[in-house]
Length: 398
Image (cartoon, rainbow, N blue to C red; front, side):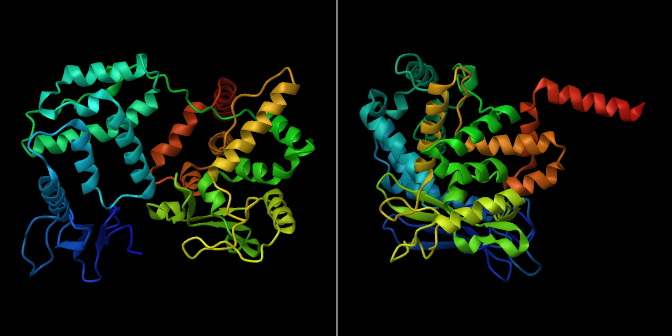
């Protein structure tokens, strides 16, 4: 697998790579599905070629030209919105499986919606804004769903503009200036709510079987797909850590696949506390070994298997959390807020921030590629947390 960074430490995009001699390359598939390569001695327009090498187009400019060439070969004279998006998606050959699934969702929606049959050269900015408002107010689509749809339409129309198929991109505006952001922010659980939920699960006749897994998610910050991708070999007990270097995913067609991290920051070793170690040991002790271990892209030994001896995926755990929470709230008057695997991750990050962990170290544990993502966690600390920290710092100064 090619490195995800070049010799200068810059993150490379999907399909990009750098050869041992320093030359950059871009791998893609042409209109007939044949793998092709393009080469350049520079990555961006700001780079200088190595001494003795001819200055030419940088790799990023070449990539844009490749995309345009692919687009031109399939672009009809009178193009509908659906055709535009189909053609745009056909040029995105170097994207992750999850991104492809997102494209498919948008295409399926446009195939059913009247907007998909409109001619692109007749779509105005007013039309685009009115349609997005219609999606939210009339169809009841969430802000995040519309954000995803526009996230495909905007670059597709931009490509059409650059190819002189339209005069200007009608989706070139800020979404927040048109729609009400009704997204509910994921709030971290309080220490009390986290404790109440885990205690309930631990002593429940049915859900106690998931206690160790829930505890691990609350106390490692793992993404649920990373957690599902864990194998026995990833538990390095002698060093007290968990190796995180892959994610287990499943398509809508029930096909399993392994996805490697986008950047080097996604590959990491997460420390185990004594209690987390005990939870993993209990999970391994209870694990029923099938006669044939399921194999996904060369990986086997997954910690959790379903009743068909196939690896559990995110959907399984989301349902377990949902049902456990529902049972708790049906029993107790003091209801708990929504709890999902991602809430566990967010709770862990907030908990470590509250305890004063160095942001750079927390960034490493969380596998964030940008420390700004980690810093944003601090905005979710409550007033009592901020007050306590301020009083502590004031006391120190006095």
